[in-house]
Length: 260
Image (tube, rainbow, N blue to C red):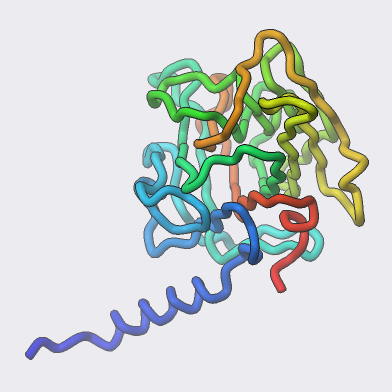
């Protein structure tokens, strides 16, 4: 017979409790609360609505951690763990892609997303983007011609391509924000319209803070198979991006309402 230490059982029970108290709402298309019994995101396979192969992530720049205080905006609260991504390193490509994951089912219709995000060390050179594409590409591939949402020049932005951007409110260093976006097919067979909200209060689904239409140089996407995040080339090594409660849903309410 083999004895099982009580402490090991206690840790498993504690992790099971964390999973029961997830920050993800029900009835969503996909979601990730970054709650794992590990410090690395690489090959982690949890969340909702994602492919079984798990995340690709560079452990030199990303880690899972327990913050002193949970990320929160209004009634929305993140989980006990968050994703931390550090700034760019000069030895890496000019635009290093930090993480990506394939969805279990492709998104072929309009969808919304929300993300709790906080940045420490903010200045005008910093860049972060959440992107949506039909292929993951290689680790150094650019996803600059597909839907991107994030921060640039100390403001939130949405864009299909670099030369066609819509900006929203500015960020405050070290403050948690709720970033909400919509990717749409407006009378088209491919996604051609982006909408963005920052810290929306009340019923704001019809009043986005910025709108971007598809330009000539952008990629025409019929379906989204992969999502990912990246950091810009001028982001300092000492900077940190904190992310929690990534949610994709069919309605504005599904991604902005707190867990019941």
